[in-house]
Length: 113
Image (cartoon, rainbow, N blue to C red):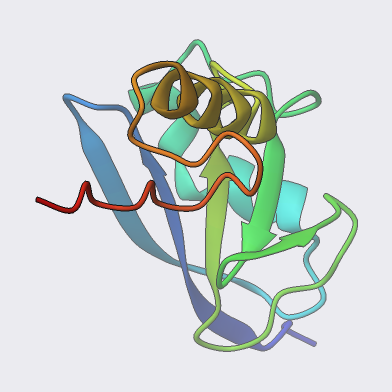
C-alpha cells in the first residue's frame, strides 16, 4: 500500500538569496521530514534544523508537527537584535533629540510662534 502524497512548500531566505521549493511528501510526514525531503538544506548548508525556529504559514510550529496539503513551511533566521530592545533604544534617542515628549514618550509639541 502506498502512502498518499501531499504538496507543500519549504522556504528560507537570506538578505541576498531566497529559495522556495515545492515538493511532495508522504501524508503524515513531520515538518522536519518535509524539510529534509525538500532538499533546501543542500542550498543552505549552514542551517541547523535542530536549533532553527520553523513555522507553517507564519505561525511557529514544532519539528514534530504534521503539515497539510498546500502548507508553506518556513525556516526562520535567528534575530540579530531583540526587537523590544531596539524599539527602546529608538525611543530613548528620540527623547534625547527632542523629537519625543520626555514624560509621555509621544511626539513633542510644536513650538508656537
